[in-house]
Image 1: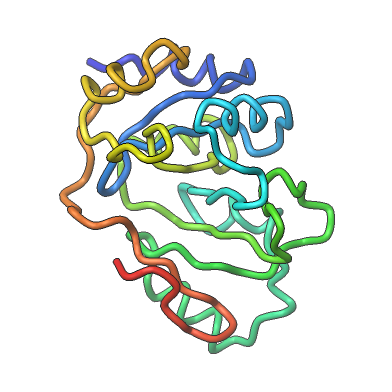
Image 2 (image 1 turned 90 degrees about the vertical axis):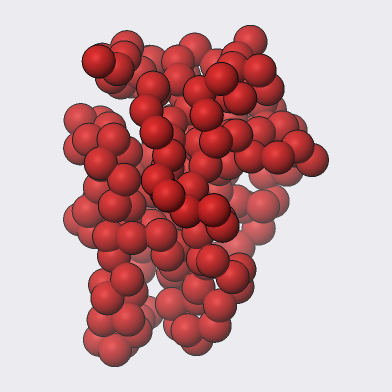
Length: 185
């Protein structure tokens, strides 16, 4: 039995949590809560300019953040073909989306996950989560609850207990407009 309810409650209260993803543990928060994002960036020692990934249970959860009108049917089909799964796509962003999420870019990185625990968490929250690897800048990403506790335990309110997926590499990142691979998976 995991600690799902307490993790969900922490998210709803604007806290940063850690959770297992396809390959490593991620840290995340409510993408619409600016103070939660600021806590996350401080915890990670991550510059705001880099932007954050959104990870969702389904495509509908991503729609409030992306501007589909800037993509062709073929470009959208290429995206949908890889989801749910370990491919993150950089897509055009809606103008009202916070620069806390997009960083210095006029796009946003999004992924529909096939990790059952993350899907469950996003569905319960009713929206995507921000997702960045659970580690301090410069250290290896965490793959177990114990590693997360060692690196970040004093900075997190809750860690969703569970196993990461079987991936040994980070998720691939591609550009939805050009199809270019930005990070090999």
